[in-house]
Amino acid sequence: MPSTAEHDGVVFCGADPLTVAGGQSNAADRQPVLVDPNSYGKPAATADQPFHLPGPHNHGQASLFEDDEPTPLERSQESQLARGATATLTPTRYIEGGNRQAVAAAVKAVLDLDATQAILTLPLDYQWFRSPGDLDYLITTLADVAHIKAIGLGAGGNPLATKGTVTALRCLISSLDRIALIRTDLAGLDAYAHGALFAAIGMQTGMRHIKPPGGGGPSTPNNRNVTTMVLHPQLMDYFKADVLQVRYGKLLGLLCHCSVCDGRSLLRFGHNYSDQEEADRHNIATWLPWAEDLQGATAGDDRIEVWRQLCYDAVQAHQDANEQLRNPDAFKAPRWLKTWAGLPD
Ligand SMILES: [Zn+2]
Image (cartoon, rainbow, N blue to C red; front, side, top):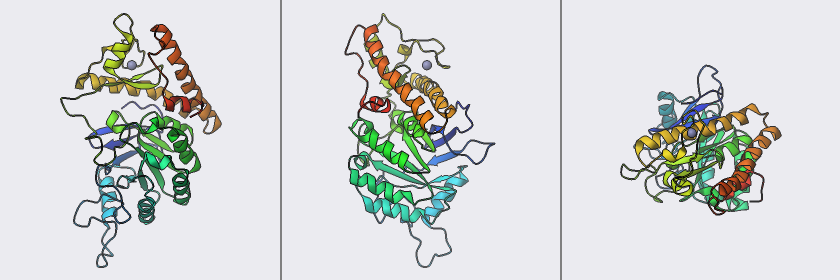
């Protein structure tokens, strides 16, 4: 795992480790490690069952006769610590758009947990960010929660592709203290620039946002269906390997000078496990310097400006790439990138 900045850390999510840019650590001698409870693919959160708690007591409350026993929620936290986590994530179920009772129930339960150790996970459907009333509810409700709030963004497709989502997410991040963004893509860097404590950027597409329960199939591809996603260093966007090959054709190379590629072309990747693994390492080696640029800037306006300029340059690079390819329609800057660059959402 590449790590040069002192605030790097790792989130383990099933078998798939997620690298963290930014982060919080009280232990200077080791990286913070979190274990993603991966509780989102189950039935969605309700007021009665905000958490996924396996076992005989599948609810958030201890019975009247078990006052001295740890609650199922406490047991879930203890098991994460036993697996080496430096802090714990609540196993919150997927929270559907506008389900305020589910948020209230998760918040109420987490208040009983140690705020220096327990992180409130909030896997929120993107519809939360399409309603100003719901956004206000989140900000008001979470403002008094001392625990770190780890937001995950859920949608069947890319949650950032919907108009207004990027701006609303940024509003939530910048309105609250002790907030983080997990299971995300480069949106994690936007969040970090705008005051998030840390961000967990997924190595694979399925780990870069949260799918709604029952929607979109498994989050990890099966053996016969490997999709290699490649982060374009100038365009700051992920592309399927074959899409890059088609756009650039055989005549042009797309040379990459990251520590993994060392001058080789990004058109070398195919859709197989071995290439996917190498592309994942290229992807990290590409965004890690951006994260380090942000970490090197003073928090606040300076860091925001470093990020905005990076994104603005990437928007401009779309024009350059299209000119190089003599095709004005080859690449179009995506909505989220333009918003990160300070252009209207
Ligand atoms: Zn590379």
